[in-house]
Amino acid sequence: MSSIFEGLMRVPARQIVPVAAILAVCFVVYVVRATPKRTAGARRWPVRKRAPLSRPEQVLYWRLCEAFPGQVVLSQVALSQLIDVDSADKRRGVRNSFDRLVVDFVVCSKAFGVSAVIKLDDRSHERSDRVDADARKTAVLGAAGYALIRVQVSKMPTASELRELVGFEGITPV
Image (cartoon, rainbow, N blue to C red; front, side, top):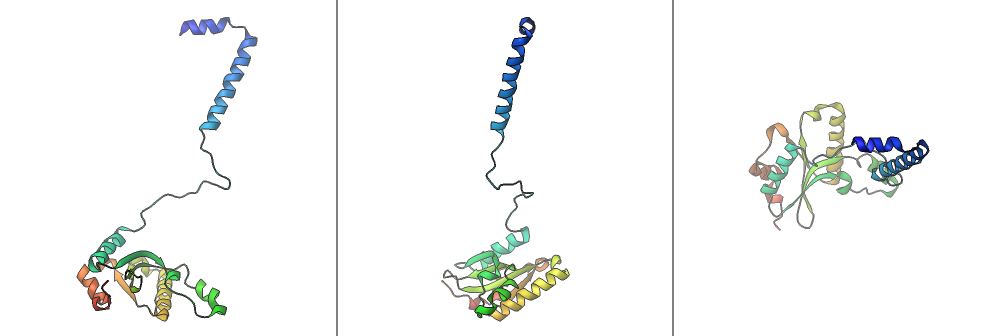
């Protein structure tokens, strides 16, 4: 190591400056190339991934699958997927009143005929904003002909209790 240092000390100063400049340019090029490229319009989002269903929702999902074999169980379904607006002139206003609302589960036949619409409620549904959203969900679903079945997290039903709640006779075997 000392021999390299001694060798550098013998190099005239006028040769060290160009070598240092070349090394500096190489370093900058390396850093620029090592930095991940961002596509046009991309930005850093302050987000992180998460599971699509909470733990209680996962429990209810699997119980619904057990209770209704042969049926399709969908989760996190937007009301706009279940409901259409009759009047073309009022479509936008009416749709805006429910288009961001979601139900936790929809049980369907394999032909995607809706058999049950289910909402899982926890303590957060006691907040005034959630009470309002839940009332709108119940009202608009009822107006479209769906009954919203509400399940309390604290009283999670078994598969047989779910069949009773939904009215298993109402589920068309596939």
